[in-house]
Length: 260
Image (cartoon, helix red, strand yellow):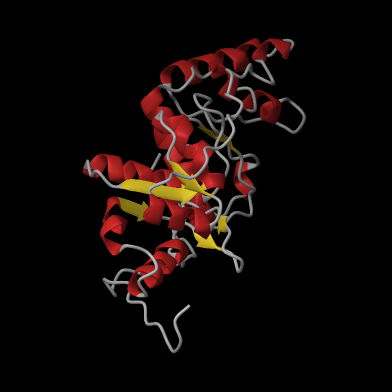
């Protein structure tokens, strides 16, 4: 490591930057500036990853989003991401991205051209059977008919009744009636979950989100001081279930009118 001070300029300055995903790119820049890595080879790659104190590359959120951005821009640069992010990128992109577990593996890639060892094959996601099928519900013919119509037409649904009549039980079974997501929908859902840093549902399975009634406006709609996707985004192409609706804050319910 060079003696003295190292100044890193993350331009443009007016774009807010947060998180540790710039660590790997900063480390490679320092190695280039000190002549330890050939700088002419760096332009062929994009680097994304957090560095530990001993050089290990840790998982970051948004790896799939970065891979999609490169694909949409139709650039020839390859993305180097942490090995722990490999599954979310490979499952939805159809190809294995360049992954690394340690900074030394990235240096070897740039100096010798030798790619890091591929990860062992991951278990594939098989189609998941509904865990709580509607067939288990005895009676409730009118409510079950409402669920089927809602799932078929993509309609909003409101259950009203006294406690213990099965409203929550029926609502939990709505996701099992939805068809499997298309490839495009599954990619959209995975990108939202990647940006949020949350484990996504299995590919093709519609998400089911059930926020607590004490959830804030930012938790439901997204945003905040560190902008993150909210529950309405995490429920994309799936079900957003608001149990005990009257207990939610009026400001949160008012906020839902426009996106719904």
